[in-house]
Image (tube, rainbow, N blue to C red; front, side, top):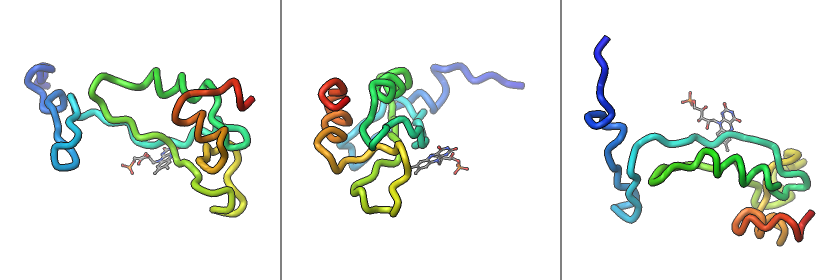
Length: 101
Ligand SMILES: Cc1cc2nc3c(=O)[nH]c(=O)nc-3n(C[C@H](O)[C@H](O)[C@H](O)COP(=O)(O)O)c2cc1C
């Protein structure tokens, strides 16, 4: 078995996306994974920790499925995050958990 050293691996070379608007430092990305940790569609502190633990400098992390309306799809999957209430939006964008719980 041959071993490719990190410095020689294409995985660890930059990748330009969106016509160069965004450049990743490496090519390891995290796929979206449904976590169901947002009771009443409001992300909890644990959600912030989850993504913080998996974030990497210059990497790409795609977050989980997020509901844009409480009506779609009926019934809304429980504990999926949503962006249709002020609490869920604030929690998602600013990691503001205390005012919503
Ligand atoms: C919104 C969303 C949520 C997802 N949630 C999960 C999940 O919870 N578990 C999982 O294994 N894959 C989930 N997937 C699929 C993975 O992101 C990924 O595409 C898949 O595991 C890669 O396998 P594939 O290359 O065979 O498609 C989700 C995809 C999307 C778009």
